[in-house]
Length: 317
Image 1 (cartoon, rainbow, N blue to C red):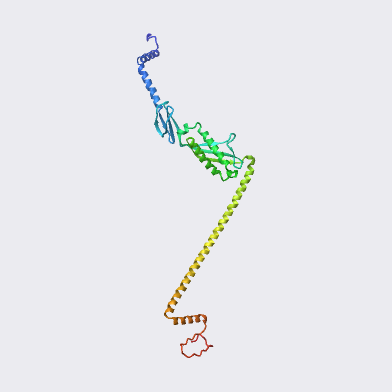
Image 2: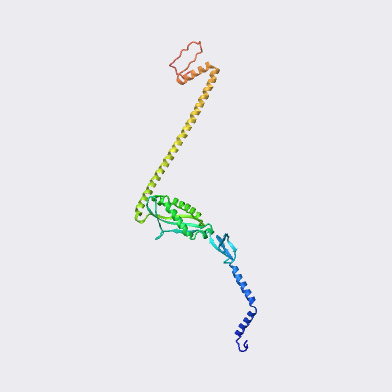
């Protein structure tokens, strides 16, 4: 080693460090290895946020697809790998044609319509979503497109443009979900929306006239139904009134008939007790009602006739 009197201090310090490292290189190597291992071990710690799910692979093989939210640990990379997916997020996908955002479809009566479709889906099986298919959004698009073509081809153009829109949406979503489940896509379709359904620009005026005519027809039918309901309501009210009047008359007649029957039974009992007297009373009552202004003179059997002054006031005794 050169004399320290002729060598700069910085160089002397470097030589001193070199000499120390040469003396303790094994210890330095161990410390370095421990540091590297510690850094490598930290790659096995990961965090999964709320609403996310981790898919764990060990040497490329699926181990688990249910790592929950929070702090998790795994074997350091590349022994194990975790892919985190957001299973709570609703993702939106739009279907369009090669030129614009509309699909050109043919209806059951061989008319051309243009449809803009959006759909929403959520990851239901993270493992299937990652490994069952290569391009899940493309698979979803093609599946929904095929089901939409089939559904529209079974209906006339008028229904597709007006009343059957909700039916087509529900049918396409149900059938597309069945297909996606059968191939293990790992997604759940939430909605399939026909955002815009229109005829081609060249025939838009003709279709608009048809729609206006149908709306007018529906309005006339609605008004006729309204008048029919009003007439039925009035008729029901009148029939209820007549029924109540008839029931009241029936009750009154029933009471009158009951009273007459009771009086007849009382008279019958009186007749059975005293037939002769009852007959005479009935005759006198009938004469009184028949001749209300006449004077009645009743003679006992065997008595001489009485001189009657027919010109006298019948009210005078």
